[in-house]
View 1 (cartoon, rainbow, N blue to C red):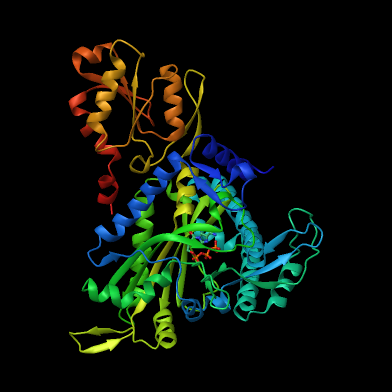
View 2 (view 1 turned 180 degrees about the vertical axis):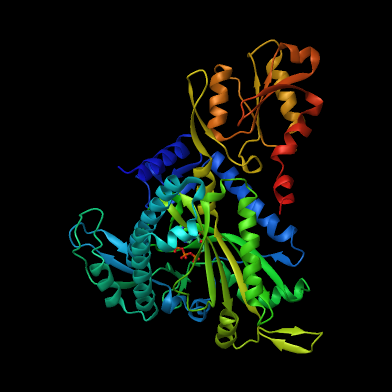
Length: 513
Ligand code: ATP
């Protein structure tokens, strides 16, 4: 098993054992690519959602929220292009009978060349030490240049083939590049076919009266069709944005990699409506704002990179992904797209209703352009969990698994631990929880040794453990232990809330934006 698979497996095991994520319907052997969030998982997920929501709506006076229904009128998906064009190219290996996304096979192939380049650059860094000039090295090193030429050639052919919807050319590229199935190791491929990703169901119970409706594959369309409702009711002036979080559904061809790719998942999307011609400025500004949102979390900076799309979706005039270094390598975490006026124009045409903005200052009316930011909540969850997970050797020779989750996102903020289960210590501990619980999510634990209790809290990422001992009864002070440094200090109970808040409050995070 590869190192990457090992890391992902370890994470999946930890997430299950410690109540973050369970396979769905596990007692029936699970349902592929569907997961349930456990007691700590749901807290982490809610905290990520809140961080996103407040960064969008509270910190931007010109962004308001919406919660649209999952079901929408079927014509919405005709207008948006999803009925005709929301397809992935699929390919099967005839020997292993495994199914793949043809574009993903090619992207992973390109990633191998990128790895080669990264290794050469590392070698160069070591060899030239101080005098290393990365730009020059990349431009002149023959191995790097050869790999980069291969990347450019494959990307070029892939772009042309996908844009022309030439599936035979996509297949030919896979064959020419000698891409093999990781399971069977052969290049015995079927032809490439298009596969629509939307789930369909029936509306209405009387036969003959029913009609096909879809589970939404993205939340964005609920925002587009409500554009005027929101603009008028909230008296918004362009530029303004509408933010929404909610479930989306896609019948993914290859749904592996834990909560990274699921058939039911949650999106956090914001559509920003701007004057035509200004969209590129806003596109750049949202790219900058979104990467700042990620970096404020303090997770390692080298885990992020931008990746500009080589094949633009039918609606976009610019698109970039924020990629994150997941256990399986760099993958898309968030998309920032300049969607032009495509969606609103399509809805005007299909609904016969005007979707225009009247600018009272210039007396003109126009269909706005849209810049959107779209992030998967579950992918963000996996990003946080995978960056947080660490196995550490301690000075005393013991080992601990610690989740260094950014403190404001941690599921439990404070664990209150009475040293022993008698002498009034449990009662004192519960009284402390009562004084803190309106501000923070607290947990009480009196089972096992203090060391074991610390380990349990480290494993779920609790930033602070508070120990109540006999002295507490007389000096009204407790020992507070920091998850990351494991340092302990004595703090007055009256000071506790302030000490803890400084690190765990969401305001610290939002204040950095
Ligand atoms: P991919 O190329 O990985 O399939 P995409 O480009 O189709 O993703 P978008 O349509 O841009 O994704 O969706 C916006 C965001 O929604 C993505 O950046 C991702 O975080 C999330 N997302 C998309 N599909 C899934 C899925 N199947 N499971 C979990 N999250 C998803």
